Image 1 (cartoon, rainbow, N blue to C red):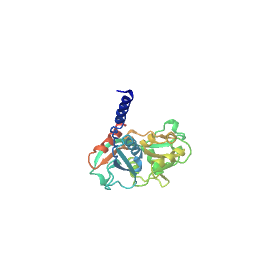
Image 2 (cartoon, rainbow, N blue to C red; image 1 turned 180 degrees about the horizontal axis):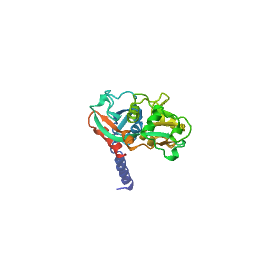
Image 3 (cartoon, rainbow, N blue to C red; image 1 turned 30 degrees about the vertical axis):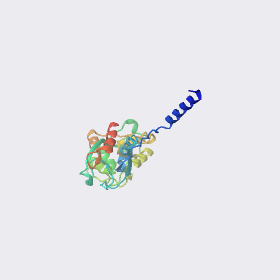
Image 4 (tube, rainbow, N blue to C red; image 1 turned 120 degrees about the horizontal axis):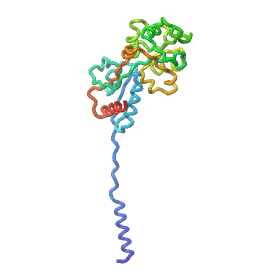
Length: 253
């Protein structure tokens, strides 16, 4: 066979092979939507769940932060709650995500900060009721104590008042913080300020804020009473995407 013919046959075979069936592209999975609703005080936990969702391309997590009472709406498949479930969700399946605790914080520039100041239950109650008005009464400076609280009806306010106030009213001189972020910013900026927030906020806050405040040492019994569970509420026991999301969160704790 002439060399030219052989070369032609080889070229034809190569072209036929090159025009073979192209590889079939794999269709990416369609993300399964998960709608999550939570109150402002649980924002750090919602952020952690969002970080978990980003690890799974088949989960699309949509977040709704609300100050309204959590309740079924026909769309939301996952709620976060602190303490006991809201009345409208008492029949839902509860998964324990974490235990959080209210931390009483004051400014690092407060003269009492280097001393690792501890306050008794009675001293805290006197501060928040307005019976103690000056840091000098607690061994500090002559500055007026600026107390920060949350709106009446908020779960954080209810937990603190139940554990600390023993029926006494919070001072009318108190400053109002709409959420833990506002309380943290206020206390971090004022050496005379004092407030409280979930300890999880100190772990997730910007370093310049977290490092500007210091938690007070509290009596063990009071510290225990300021603990609360963080619950994930689903209509039934979590399956598929919900189960994957919650297992990821728990694995990171």
